[in-house]
Length: 190
Image (cartoon, rainbow, N blue to C red; front, side, top):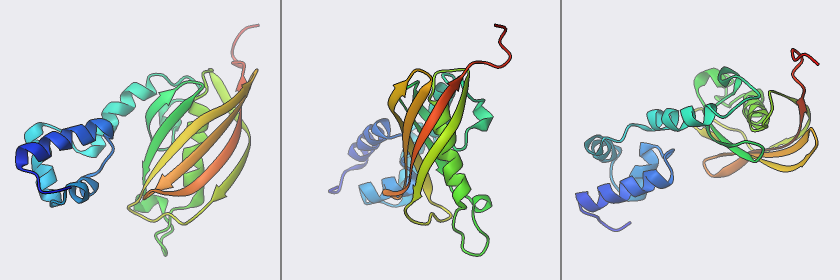
């Protein structure tokens, strides 16, 4: 982006964050060719919270739609959901998720994010994973952000075919094909 004056940059910053509220300050600094500190100052002047607060705000709306799992059971922050259609979650890779020696995230965390997202998008009280076919494409390191997108490809009665693609740094790091079953509530009187 060519050199913008402060007012132009702030307007474009607002537009960028409306388009994608999950951009972090470092990414915004690269987009606008300014320092991270400049982005932080611009956000503060505009009253725009940092990415974690923006994500939590969007997540509250998404969690209110979920029926099949409790919000605490979803791995990552659920930020968008259309029941029986699609969903999006974000997981920040912290030290606790990584192998101590290599700082590479443990695969079961990546799988858990994808699996719980696949279950969460099903519009039922109880949904269970029947099977999955998964592939890890590259290691994920501490400090990266995992963005998982789930999409229902096909549904037959109580059987849902859900594809999940997880990206980090614009690379597809994981793909999964899940078969999710909608199950009658076991506590329900017949």
